Length: 300
Ligand SMILES: C[S@@+](CC[C@H](N)C(=O)[O-])C[C@H]1O[C@@H](n2cnc3c(N)ncnc32)[C@H](O)[C@@H]1O
Image (cartoon, rainbow, N blue to C red):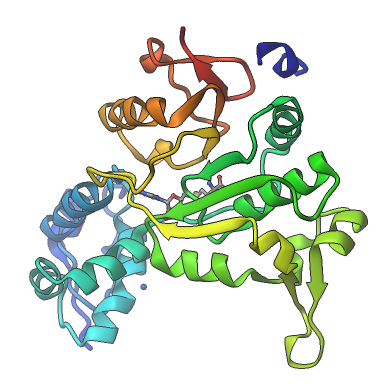
């Protein structure tokens, strides 16, 4: 494939330890006034837990982000401190799900990193195997997966292309949004008029300001919660293309390597692995070889 790729936030407490421990805070800066006590030890526990549950390596400078994302869980559950919340969390499967959902970063967009969809279009046209199978392994709210479906319709000039797309994510909340396929109209602002007309329905009345992806696109997609860290993935047949973009960046190098070892047998011999714009797998050169533009093929 290398040839086609060359083109290219109760009680208010001040937490003194925060001042001492927080590596991101300038000396002498006042500690934040907080609704709930959140110590450095609490933060370390959160970091350890999200690493254990999701493989996410949270930077030591993300303490304020963690507080602001989890504080809603404490309010919702009536927990008076992070210490109590964390004790409640451990062993509570439902809350672990909510904890993970709160801490994932779900930024995405339709046709993000657009060159990948051009490459995919060429790949689909050149491939002989049908159906062409794609795994969108960190699908977030679905924009990426629907972009794949649109690219497929365009490549085959059909609303029923011979393409199957598995769209997965660890975050059950974003997956619900993804499977509904309804978005604020601003999310599609940048799509050209042709794509808007062909692939979206505009809401009216109470749905004014919303767009819905056409059911033909949804028919190409299957949504499933898959934690990439789980020891088993519910996948038997290899894929022609794996989109695993802008998620590996949250994992450390060892986790990345372990995952790449597991992705390898799930990619067809001529398949392509699409990574995010700041993700590089030089440390896995014996597994995958770059063909440029953060697209990888099997190292032979
Ligand atoms: C920044 S978004 C990227 C979305 C999309 N791939 C893109 O590039 O626009 C990262 C996604 O990875 C998901 N994620 C984080 N850890 C994960 C894990 N262990 N297993 C599966 N998905 C995970 C998050 O829930 C989030 O939706």
